[in-house]
Length: 181
Length: 448
Image 1 (cartoon, rainbow over the protein chains, first blue to last red):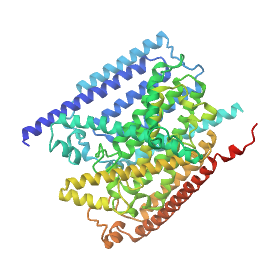
Image 2 (cartoon, rainbow over the protein chains, first blue to last red):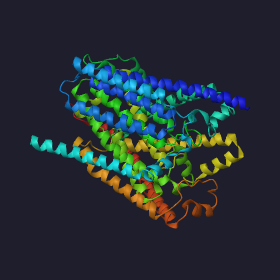
Image 3 (cartoon, rainbow over the protein chains, first blue to last red):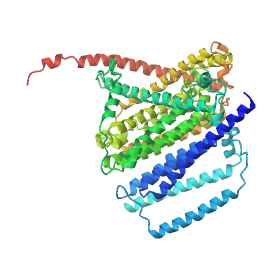
């Protein structure tokens, strides 16, 4: 095993990683377009699922396994199911459709294009580090220690915020039922 | 990129491809393993479980079950599969065609993907470096629900939508006690990596995580109940309760698409049982710690044939454990009546969830009061030495060892009693069946 061989294998790995990146990025981008274009709410949610799965794949590619699994369990498994659940409970016709007005479409497109150009500018002008942090040296127990050690206060503030949101939601749901009675 | 580079612990890959193979060989090897190994494994397990379920159901209802195709009807699933393959592919006219076609794959693919992290044997894990193994399986199984909900929704049928909605609320609520009980096990282990979980428990029966402390023991029970609900297995099979919803979410499905749902369900059953075996019941390890001992010995000596045999034994032990859990799931299915949906949710939110939280708190306090070394490797552990058996497994702390042994005695006692009971019931059931199938009463019956 010579150094040249190792370098060749490293090059091949770069190539495979690039191919996988384009596959996952393509899945995300195409299904994100589907989210915008589709007029059926449930289909929109399904396209969103594929967008989120594609992003989870990108996280895997960056060795951020925990983030990828969190992405799947929180967004794909939790939030999306709640969205679909909400649609099922609230929609009156079986396949309710989005019918946006022309003004709404124009406003949405202009806002989205401004954000898009801002992002493109920001990405092209930023100088990224050539050797990013090595995530392999950052195991999951270290992540937990960091969350509950260095970042304890923000972590607790976020959990209190979530608790407040939950209590608020429960209060709203209860109040509405009392009115119905 | 780590996932493609480090192959240090891929024993079988090294055996076949040699050291430092070209990258394309590794990729082709992985694809072949997925296509030939995992696809076949999932299908065979699902088909075997379907046959087994019908056989168990038959025996529990004093029937015989499938017995025509092959010896004791074991090829029945194959014949059914052929029939489903040739059936007309029906789709309701007003269904959402795109989602209707997509849903079976969305249900099946996650169940298949979850197999990639299961530790079948020390070297028979597809991705041993997956540091979030348990969490990954949990995450991917939560995606599986999407397929079921979409199937119910896209069928555009009242019964199916009810089934999908029930699945949604059931899954979303039972996922919380499921996750918390897994956290209790992970806290006792100190790792999420499934291979490490296996090696951690290689010191004999009393080092299995279920006996680590009383709270893990209780978490095991909570996990089992929650896993039944998240797999929509009876008594929580409300999404497809046939007496009220026809067949629930898969009412409108026929042919191959229908069979995909079945494969997904039985695949997920195996995955859930596999997590239970890996996290609580010692993964591939035998009760005496022999596999762990010989694994380290053979790895040290470089004994290839010994390692292959050891891996095959570990594989059969792991599958046996998961199958035992599946049998208990079937047993409950054909024993318990089905509760109403509000009772199911009551049981989760007001009983199981507080219980899981209390167990989590108790496990955390136990961890503080009874310190031990999480992640203790059993490299030097010799199961033939009485000294090792008594002293080294406890890590440090006698209280931990005493707890382990007491819990082990309880566990072994209860499971022995249950097995004896099952054997007794099977034996007396055979007598009963002989009496029932005796044609004499029919012959004696008066002609109408």
